[in-house]
Image (cartoon, rainbow, N blue to C red):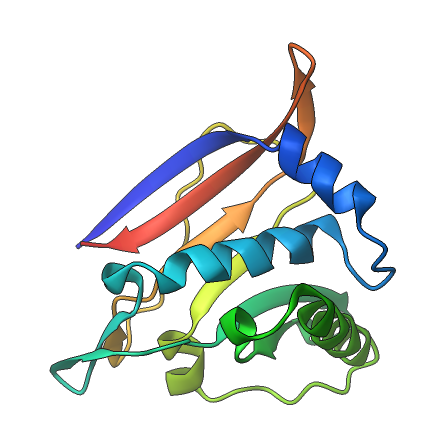
Length: 169
């Protein structure tokens, strides 16, 4: 029961605003995460999860960000909590600290229920795509929204970025 959709987003104005900010810990990807998390909070359908056979509303659900770290683990996940309740500067600091800890191999693996209850937001900065079908792990929770940003590119003088989404319906 999912919809897979890929959009080509015009992020020209968003990138210009990002570049004007004096937040050295902020990356453009984390800037997009923070704004997307805020937008999702306003929509009930992104808060719904079916847990143990019962639909629940998860206010301010955590965000999971997969991070390639190499080595035997290859990947780990950042668990970003209270994103929509933080200022951009607070979130930028949290994101940067967790990213550095992940790259140093200091982020513990989260349990499967925590992972599935969160909203997944990933980044594929080396992949420019026009269509991407995201993976799904069947589990005890339904309704997890998944988003992946791709490689930025310029088209007709505008900065574009692909965004793939897997949404429960």
